[in-house]
Image 1 (cartoon, rainbow, N blue to C red):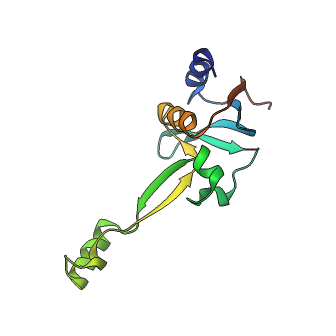
Image 2: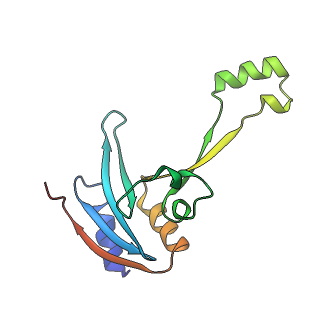
Image 3: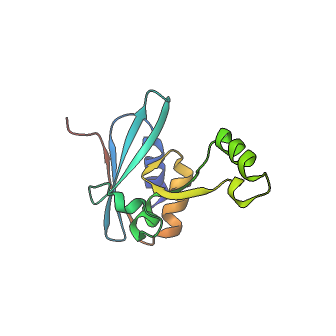
Length: 134
């Protein structure tokens, strides 16, 4: 992709309705804006070949690793950690925080998305940037 095409995608990012279509290493990638009004957050959803498949959220999925964002979430809340420390002792293995990792189809940062896509893929072709047909 050229700098002008990346600039066009960046200007579109988080600006309401519409979509961007890319062809990346033989996969059709569609980007759609999503607004979570309850949390007041703008995100962009990544569709691979027109779908969001649950199997891509596994960390051993090649497609998920190429296009989706890796997230690391804590397994226990601070309250649960405090209880576990009281039960097992604060230096025990059971009282330490554990994490789980998954791939998420939601991106919030354009820079992070661009860096991830350019570092994990070779052939990126800009197809279109437009509004949804309603």
